[in-house]
Length: 171
Image: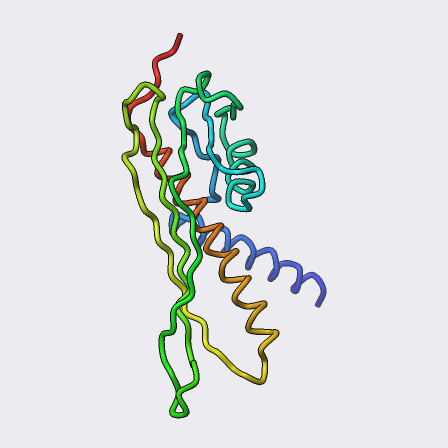
């Protein structure tokens, strides 16, 4: 009986592996950027900047530099904001749902007046319902949604940087 279970488990694992490879599933690899060096204009206290720098250091061969004059590309932060807007009210006139917005405005240039990415705005939106009985849990959910939007924003920013067609010439 034990040999049958072992064989069944191995067969199931093999079948699962075949199905995943047949559908085109592939683990996300590292992102290569067309810049050898990059300066980023996030403040040191920015959680978005911290996560972005971590992805650059661990997932690319691009080196972050502290001096914008020594960078092949400069990512300038033009704005970053979080907003909460009422989406709907209940019959008593109390808030039932909010829209959460995370907006990031940036540009990427070569430091010599040539834009790789012109000033661009990325706005992410999530909905959150309100329940007066679980106020603490909803505040924690709101923070979790903002962190999720932050991670999504970092991934979008990396994809946009990777899509820049003009590579810096090798010296």
